[in-house]
Length: 111
Image 1 (tube, one colour):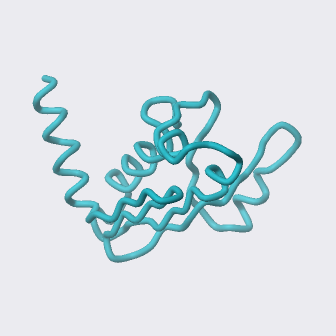
Image 2 (cartoon, rainbow, N blue to C red):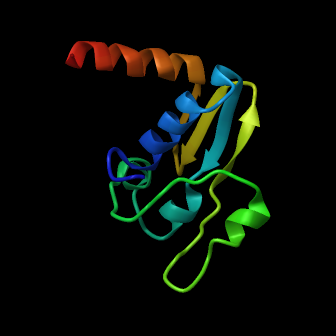
């Protein structure tokens, strides 16, 4: 869910926890969110209630849409262990293993 750090954090956590470890990554473009007048930082880190990141077969994901449930495709899971995320003029390109190391480091400091 995006309520703790927004889409960027939710997507990074999903990439870190993905089966296959650092071999999986993602390519995400948040342009549909920035086009609607939202700033890049809001698209990346906005903690809007009720938002979830879901990965799966495109047809199955489209099948989730119903009245009151909006499905907005923003990217894809890719092999190679790269985390690529773009929101307007802002972009992040890192290896998933680097994100995991930073995440673990923060958790250790908070313990």
